[in-house]
Amino acid sequence: MDRMRAVRLHLPTRTLSVEEVAKPVPGPGEVLVKVAAAGVCLSDVHLVDGTLTPLYLEAESVTLGHEVAGTVEALGPGVDGWSAGQRVVLQAGERRGGRTHTRGVDYDGGWAEYALASAATLVALPLTLPLDQAAIIPDAVSTPWAAVTVTGDVRPAQAVGVWGAGGLGAHAVQLLRAVGAYPVIVVDPAPAARDRARHFGADLALDSGDPLLREQVLGATGGGGLEAAFDFAGVPAVREQALSVLAPKGRLVLVGLSDQPLTVDRSTRFSYLQHQILGHYGSEEHHVAQLVRLAEGGRLDFSRSITGVLPLEEAATAVRRMETKEGDPVRLILRP
Image 1: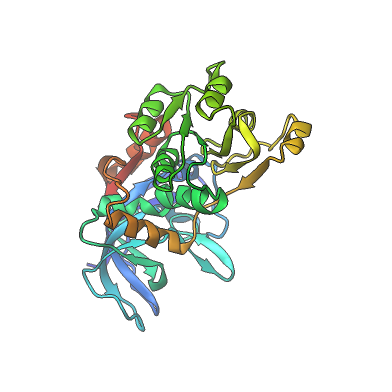
Image 2: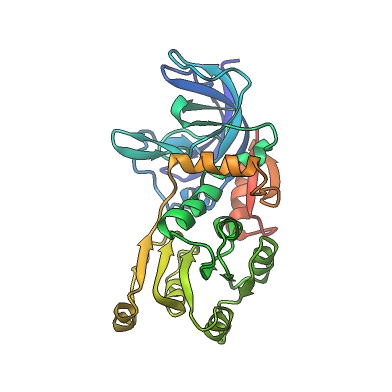
C-alpha cells in the first residue's frame, strides 16, 4: 500500500482534515515508523487556531503530531542498530542546519498511519511501557522534566510552586516529587485541576483567586516562601503572583508560552531579594531516554496521564476537547 491516512493542517486557512497522502519512503539515515499512538497537545490547538505559526515549514500544509510512538516499519539506506517491529518513541524534533525543527510543526509529524524519522531521533522502548503512555513522554513529560532538573535546578527538600495543572503542570508535580522537592504547591483556578494535582501528588493545591494565597504559601513553607516557581499557564497575572511568594534568591521559570509583555511591577523588591526569571523551552534528546528508563524502573507512572483514545478521524474533536477542557483531559491520544 503506497497511500496512508494523515491529519493535515492547511496553514493559510487553518483548516484541519483527514487526507489520503503518499506513504513516505525512508531515505538515507531515515526510518519509517508505523504509528501506534500520537499525543494531542495544546501546541497543536494553537497551531490550529493560529496562535502559533511554523518557523521553517516549506509547504502550506503539514501533518500534525510531535508526540509519537510506534514500531519500526522499514529502514532507509545506511541505517544500523534498528530492526523491523522494534518499539520506539520519537524525539519531538531534530537539529537541522543549526536550528531546531519541531516534528508536526516544521515538518510532517505523527497524526498519521506512518511517520518518517531520522534514525537519530528514535528511542527504544521496553515491553513494559505501553505505547500510548510512551507517546506523550516527548514534550508532555520531557518539557517539565527539563524545566525542573535543568532550568529550575530543583534540589531535594526545596519548596516549589506550580502554576497551572494542565498536561505539563500535572506531570511537573509527579516529577518534582521524584527529585525530592517539598512541599510541592499547585495553584490553579479550576477545582478539577486542583483535584488532579492532588491526585498526581501535590502537597497543597490552592485557588489562584484566594485572597489568602500568600499567607497559605508562607505557612506551608515555614515563612520562607518558594525557592522555585514554575509558570505552566503562560499568563502575566500568574507571573506577578508567583514573584510575590518567592523566597530570597528564588527563581521563576517560565514554561507556558505567552505573547504578552513580561513585566516586574515591584522591581526594587525584585532586585533586593535577588530574584531570577528564567525562560524555558522544550527538552534535550537525553531527557526522553532518561524518562523512559525511569518509567521502566517503576520510578514514574504515566497510567493516569491518558484521558482518552480517539481514531484519526476524530482529530478535530480531540483538538476541541483540549481547547475547551471538555472531560478535563491531561492528554488525549490519536490511534490510527
